[in-house]
Image (cartoon, rainbow, N blue to C red):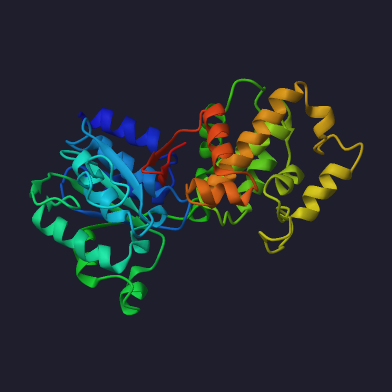
Length: 361
């Protein structure tokens, strides 16, 4: 890959030109050229998986498999089978042979998201695989050599987990050969306009796009973004539903983020918890051109309801870290019903042995 192509690819995956993002892209370029294990840290929703995808894409393994697994979403009794595979009949329910995720990622990359949630007994087995580069399927007796680049990520402070005996120190040092920290969104607020433009570009073409005014962008940059880039993406999608084809002003931003945002000329502390009042007021106020009127703003009721249903499902999956059964409970529907709706809305998902281990949108 030429330097020009590399820069283009990173610019497409890692949006923003703030100093922190420039520094992050520089570190990623070095990380992509090596085969060492990488530990990505940063708050939830900051884009750790995007960083892992960028590293894989620019590496020599870019044409091979890139498998992501959420360690926190794997049931403890099945995690070994999911990661390392099992032979037919090795345990109740093992009706077929299963090739584990490490084998599937051979010659490529495996991304272990939320590694801090991995059970301590599995950490021992993972450490052995990292040191020997050999996996043994559950119920098998054959050593299977693998060539896998391991990238791990966590939002936790693993130093505290090590002190609490919840994470093995030797595994930490095995994984953290190249440490990469992803900044929180409020540490690179100057990137917010570029991120909004990026998310708008990827919105459905069914409805006209909203237009964020300069004052709205300024208000967005003053917000703290506790949910980071994931929250910003959801806000842009919400704006596309409720402000389709309309301008968005500063007072509208408070509605979209369900928070009270200080005007530029006031020294008021920004909060993320005052909210629903602004949302309710927006739906009850009459006559303001900058107020959300669902009934006046909807031109196609069916399309609007479908878009709203998809947004609710996406939010539920985000909150449940991709665990389908948990997401279904959070919005009071059956798991099978949620799966049917995910298919209808083209929300990609993966299930192995009835175990939800990854959600990819």
